[in-house]
Length: 477
Image 1 (cartoon, rainbow, N blue to C red):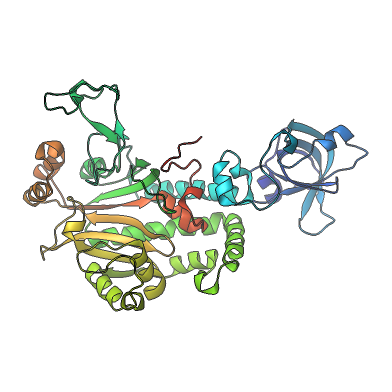
Image 2: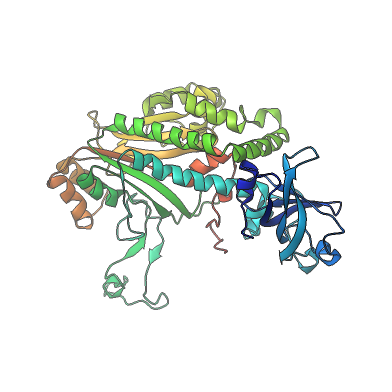
C-alpha cells in the first residue's frame, strides 16, 4: 500500500480508509499510543496499538526517533488533542533507534548548543523542523515575488576575481601548492601559474555581475551563497550565507526603498498565510524562552504579533543625519551606555540600529544618505558631495537586514571614486565600460537570507536558521 504523507492525512482525512503512513516516533505512551511525524507538518499523527495484533518484539523496538511504517484504519479520535487517529493493524520497523547504542537525542528539552553540535539530528526536533520548513517557504516566496513582477533570475559566479565590497575579507581559491607556491622576483605569489591565471576568491556579493544583467534585461535578481572570511563569533554572522540581490535599471533610491519594503512584507505575509502552524509552534517556543528572562529583557511583542505589526505598518524612513541626531538625544547616549561612539561620519553599530528600531520608532526603519567615506565605491554621490544614495533596512531584534544603494552611473565620478580609495582601474575595466557605453541610472540591494529567516522564525542565533553553519573554527558536516 502506497504511503500517504501525514500532512495530507490531517488536511483531508478519509475516515474509515485503511492507509499506510511512515515516519519517526516523537513519543510512545503506555505501550499503546505513538505520536508519529514524517516532516511534512509540525503536527503528529496518533497511532493506537492493540497489543494482541502487534508482535511483542515489534513493540519493544518502538523507541524515540525509531522509523516506522504503519498500516491501519483512520478513525475519528476518541480522546482529546487530535481529531483523527490510526488503529494500527501492522507495524514495520524501518530503522531502529536505541539509546543503548549511543543515540544522543532524548525526548526532552535540549540546549541549542548541544543541537548545533549534533546538527545531523536536530531537524528531527519540533523547533528545527519548523525552522527549515519555513526556510524553504521563504526561499520559494523569494522566487515567486520576483517572477510575478517580471524579474529575471541570474546565476552569478561563486568564484570571482573581484571584491564587490572592497573589504578584503575573502576566502582565496587556488590550485597552487600552498606550502611552496611559485613566486615573482619581488617575492609575491605568481598567480599567472594558478588555475585561472590570476588571484581569485569566493564571492562576497553577486552585485557587480548583477549590474551587467540589469543594464541589458532591465530588472534581475540573484539568489546564491556568499562568503566572508570574518573572524566574527557572534549570533549575527556566518562565514557562508545566502544573499538575494535585485538590481533594477532606471530605479532611483526611492524606488529602491519601495521595492525593499514591498519585498520583505511579501515574504512575511507568505509565511503567515501558508505556514501558520509552524509559526504558532515557534511563537509558543519563543514565549516560553522570553518568560525565563527578566522583564526588562523581554521582547515587546510575541512572534506572530510582531510579524503582523511589520506587514501592517509603513516602515519609518529617515536620513543618516537624522538618525545620528536622534541617537545623540537618546537616554543611552546621554548616560554613556552605548558601547560604540555616536558621531556624524561613523558607521551605525548594531546597538544604534536596534535603538532606532526597538525604542525610538518601534518598527522597521530605513536609513538613507550615509557619508561617502563609510560606504562602497559604487554608490551614487549626492549633490552635497558628502553623502551617497545608500540605504539600510533595519528590523527589530536583528538590526540590518538589507543594504543597498542607487549606483553611481556617471563614468567620470565613478573613476574618481575608484582612484580615491586605491582600486586600480584595470581591475574594474568592464564595470567602468558599463557606464561609458549605454549606461543608465539603476539601483539595487542585498538581503541577507539567513537574517530574514531569523526574523520570521524568531530564532536568536543565526546558526540555527541554516542547516550546516560555517563559522570560525567550524566546518563540520
